[in-house]
Length: 84
Image (cartoon, rainbow, N blue to C red; front, side, top):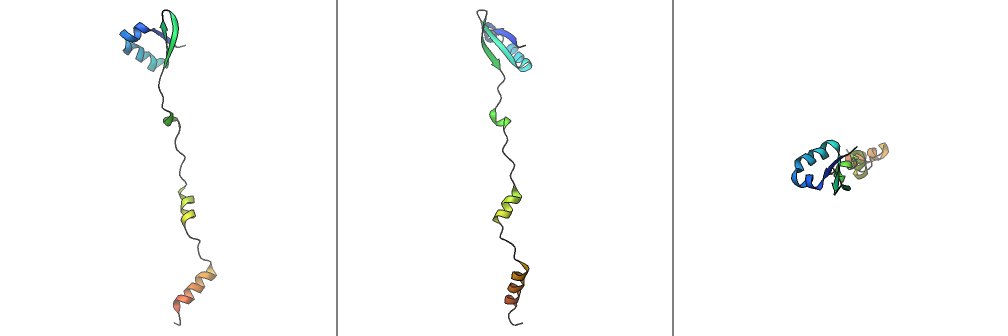
């Protein structure tokens, strides 16, 4: 159940109402005996969502050239050797 406070309490005893909001999570504010407003704690939307984790291995394999096959490596080696 939420606590209640009056508009006069907000004006004259705000630290007390603030502590009620922090402990209870919600305070109903009454004006002339009728509930008019609801005070709740403010939470940021950014704290609820975190960015997705980065896949560094996928990025690396995407930008890396394909490895040479054994036959292509042997042909390159023979070409670099020349007539030696």
